[in-house]
Image (cartoon, protein in one colour):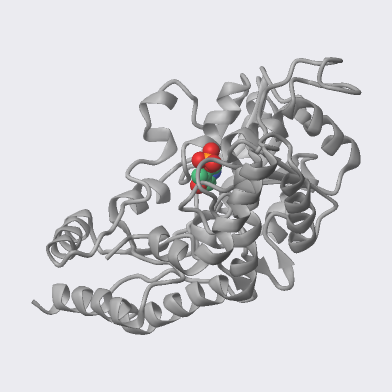
Length: 375
Ligand SMILES: *Cc1c(COP(=O)(O)O)cnc(C)c1O
């Protein structure tokens, strides 16, 4: 069994993917080909925002947003303590301080009370300027943007949605990657919408930020690539990846997102009496980038992981360490208590999930978890 079966997806979509790739090879428009602008139009329309700017990966997408806001030395950016490294890494790379905020055990997402406390503590200390919040849609579920937006407004902070795992999620009818002042996503192969290499995108309704990001993306270009009006980077999405993504976006919209939610619903039915299952809040819809369960202890988690492995069922620990526990952030000061993230890191386990997981495979996973507890 595969944790995320990209080979099976390719077999299903091969008849559309092969000609799409071949067309790019025939036209040899590898950089900024027509598939890129067509994809950007389709993504903006799907997400429901004015501008989509594709780029080389989800990490660059975050960096481009921070650059557009001029975030740097002396600034504080609030990030969840439980996320993928890049969320906080990009802040530190720009010279700003990532201020870690605790998360909720039920949704794994940013805890609004902890966020507000962190902002107040930074203000009280008076050394850093609070500038922005990065809220992550962890494992596919959008963060609590209604409450987070209220806090952002109260303290005059910019809101960045890291939707690297959230693409396809919703709150009510509003789609993920539309909740931030700027929002970003990643097309890394294992993300909800993945390409065949690295890729990413930035979303915003704001015209002048969009224009700035388009410039930063190509060496700070002005009216053309050789009229450089600021220092930027080289972070384009390849035409080949855009061609792949256009095919995959169609499948994602038509059935993949629903299929992955069907798997999650069957897992929930089969597992909810044995383990902590992911809770999707009322009115929220998850794209289930991961199906992460919570065990009672680290010992129980490690035992289950081994047990599944013996039955040829892969599982993963996302993430083994909280941000504040990482060596790279050893010297970053803490402003609030960070208890939940560390606790979750010891007890969390992600089970195989993807739109092509058969019912037979799902039953094998559920059966194995049951057997582990009833041994
Ligand atoms: C994957 C991921 C990123 C980075 O995306 P890349 O395309 O791998 O650079 C950023 N944030 C989160 C939450 C992610 O899961």
